[in-house]
Image 1 (cartoon, rainbow, N blue to C red):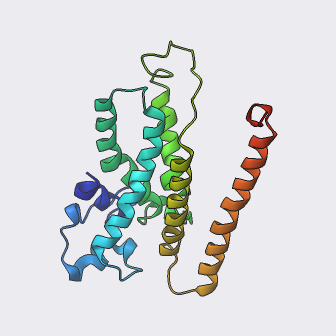
Image 2 (cartoon, rainbow, N blue to C red; image 1 turned 120 degrees about the vertical axis):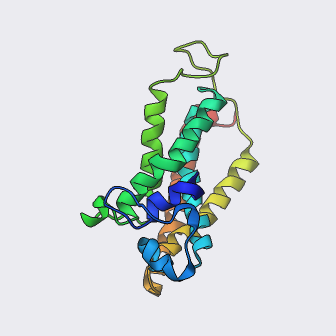
Length: 212
């Protein structure tokens, strides 16, 4: 759905609310700069831009999925995913990244803090207000202890996500400003390290996690 209509609504040239051109990425090469004016800052092929942006849509949807798991039927989530990727995410994305009304007010979202993460969290919060607290095996208003997870997979996923964000932030830098790129590298390398050290210290301080 993001390929068919979502990408056009998000980045297509249109009005301050939605994009109205570029449906299904059916655009001649000579017209790409006009149809997708908000993406004309880069000479990267349109297919590569689409693959890059559809991942952001998937990440935002995954935030919602993480909270809806075991709380809603799978069919309900599929329906929500179709609507989210076709309309909900693209409309908000157009407001900020596609030249919409928020961008004209000067709002900037460098790598998705609002379009991706905040939007996913807000949709999840709204979805949870209509759902039960857990699976059918969990009594209403009761909670079960969460068992330990596969630590190697957690570490692997952390490094994959960490490495991926290096590339995602670089793409959002217009031009070839080496200082800005080094600054992004510094921030994205040091902040996770600092957060990881703080989390490890906090966990270790809890008696339940100390070795006997």
